[in-house]
Length: 417
Image (cartoon, rainbow, N blue to C red; front, side):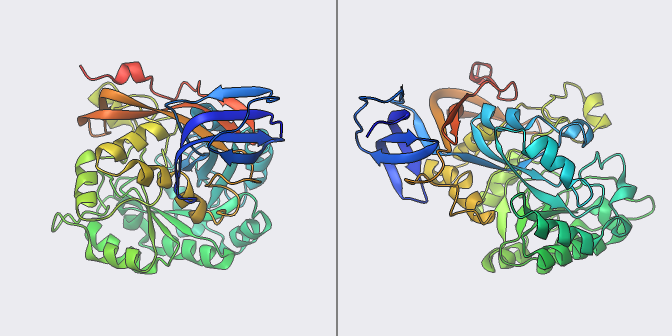
């Protein structure tokens, strides 16, 4: 059988299919037509020799900010975060709202080469630069009925609901917004994705106990809901400020099926990550959480003080995967966080997240470099890693996209001195 494209001799890691070994993949008409130890190249229009490269199901970034031009400086170009970074599916976390989803569809999702999905914002304004406008994120800025309706009318795009649980908001409204977000999620039949870690300064004259906030929040969450930023350096995360250990109530949530998304962004701390992982909690999914502030590296304390989201280290999805490797997760475990697990989270396991004959040819090709690489977190802490993952290219429905995004940190700049 002739193929349009053959991916030859790549090391496939596909956790959902329990496949880990060297195989050829034949692609025809944008779909996977064959996966075999060897496929004859005769008649194939194009062959890629992937010897010594990793071939995995098309990567899924569960936490992106890509409502470009609408969410201020937060919104990045979808294809720069997506296919040109080796990522075939990108989930915007809270950019569009029930008011702005039509624009998201027309101007972001439909023109993009990347598969674009979203967790719709619980707030009418969506994902504006909320750190400047906290008054727009109170319970009066939530319309449960309309958001449920829009989510139900757009199941091809809307795969969940996004809300925030942090001490700045709680100092103004308690957990009222979170409770409304949960009403939306239940009404729409979708998971609720909760941001942890402080965003806004506390309201003047108030003080919120971050531990008490977590204790009140977590019982509201059900199986399939998602706690984001488990490794945050900001108050109100997984680690209790009282005990220095993981909150007992977090364990209870995980036992009933709440999952954990890394949401790297400005919320990744090696110190916090070690504590959480050593306690026995491994992330289920991994989102890069890149946006227009944290991809710009803050070089001074003054820059960092002006905006809490400025980064101090360049990163992208494969860079975040490399950090999970250095923290002790196995390569198949890390691959699962960007393939099969997010497909399950999105309820799309029958469409994406694994390599199977008959499915769309969404495939990511990576290089696993050996050496000594400096990986930094957004607290300014660096570690030296013996391996680093970098994207080479991806296929989205069989179409080839090189990894040329300027958002991908060049490997040569990360070699440890």
